[in-house]
Image (cartoon, rainbow, N blue to C red; front, side):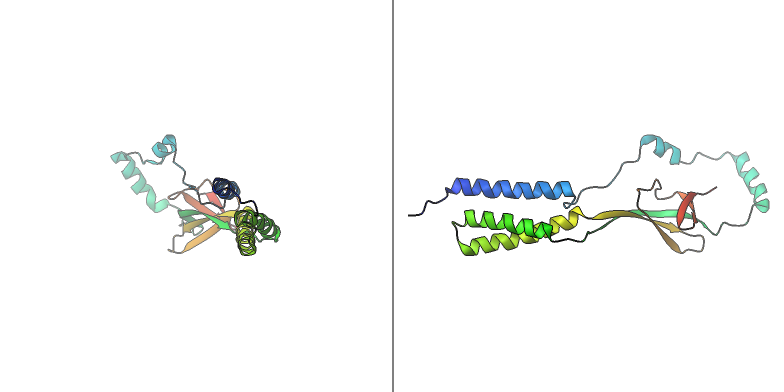
Length: 179
């Protein structure tokens, strides 16, 4: 009679493998996470408009006829989005996953060839996805509403300091503060 693996050992092995896979997926960024950021209190206060004094309104109104022509490169930030682009897999993740899955399937399935094959296929798929996620890149798309009503999207590799409602100027595909 062939020695059998105890059910508790098999269950513990599967639990360790699943938790390890989840941990690897979390570390490599495969699991979705929140990228929301809270606005600091000082920024909230600074973004609130102060109440205008009646004298200031009349001064602004009298200065209006002498104002410069409208800025055609100026706009208002409408949206800032983080975009993740999946990386290309080289096959290393699939091979590593297939080997690990085959070993686990072989042990859990009492040396059954079908369990070994199923473990190898499942491991290859998971390894492939983990490798793609590990090689993923991110960029940021900033949507700006222009004076003519059109929306221009400017992409950047680094996280922008702009938020919705900021007044900006689009110069050579880059954003600058509106002066």
